[in-house]
Length: 301
Length: 244
Image (cartoon, rainbow over all chains, first blue to last red; front, side):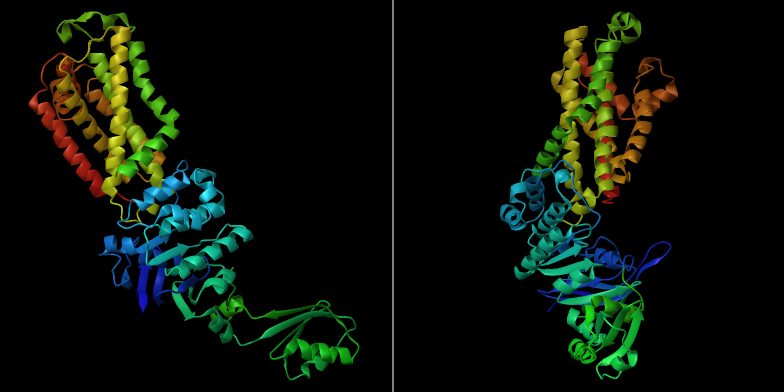
């Protein structure tokens, strides 16, 4: 069952087209990623889904509701965590949760929610005194306090340190496990790869492809890369003679071999036969990053 | 609504220095101007009354009200807009009228406290009179204050940030103080200016205050102009309100 249906969404601002033509469906209970570089139109897309902006073309349905004409009903089933939104500096954590709970007809128990996002010890801290990670966790809690069916989380982990990022990821997975469908907007490949069931890859206002992370990586083939420094110079021909090797390149003393199959084992064996030791050996597999480059012809970052 | 009120009150109290400074000014001005000998003599323009008896405290109450309406309130809401606080709220089912209503009610309470302090300090220090028609006075104060705060909400509804709100607020404040008779008493105003004053909400407010101070009932046209202002401005504020 689809919880969100977006068809041919189009949104332009005065001087440029932010969203050209975007279509995707989000299924109930999944974590759906909207991935793309900065300025690709991700935020505008979710703002149209959340009813914060009025699209210039196309249709959007969230739980069967039109965000433009049925905004009131929409806001009861959709929780939103926005990139550019804040709370008053002086408001305390519990006050913010209590206040936002009062906006909904059937809110969640905010005390329990506060514990779940790990802010129990910060109950009486002012919003202005919270760390980046704590603010994000409060923001997630506020998005969930109305018991939404769908939660939109925009650039949730931008600006967080690696530990806080991992904690937040764990929280998102817990939320999904509690039955909430999640739309996750991100420009972090690693985040999308780790969390999302399916991803819409967006570039310059259009959907490049919708697929699972594994599906995306499969599109660029099961290609692997091997980097090493040979202890004795080695001829390219020796490596190219192996059926698994597709290409050999050199950067300084370093040799980069690309290929498929059991590449690492075959190459090291061939080198060993010639008494060559591959020093600083590293094996790299194709990632979502490579898929992005292959699909759009450029780097994400 | 109740919860917004409670939280906003707490936030106001946590930032009490700014509020106190804004509202202490009228009291300070009252006590300072009250030392001018001419204002303590019987004035034939006022029918033999002294300026410090009712005229001056009434104007200082107006000043406190205009400060709350045109500086404190628009600044608070526009800063919320600038910082994305309103944007965050706009994703919830909360109605903007509830937020505006809470802000109006909160500032009404603050302005009432300021008015009481002005009246009491005038009475204790300058020997000013106390409002004689208390019920009428309270009615006039609440109605006029609500109308002026609603006009402040119109500014708050559209100003994109705190700086713009403060600028629009200050610019609007001085003409209003002028037509209210802050510098020229209504009695010596030219006819055209007096007509403007009569329809300006602040003019009827000051006049009705002086009437009730002297023990008379407020005049119906004065109350009507203030009530019309309240309905017009609050309707306009809700219509024009933008979350971002």
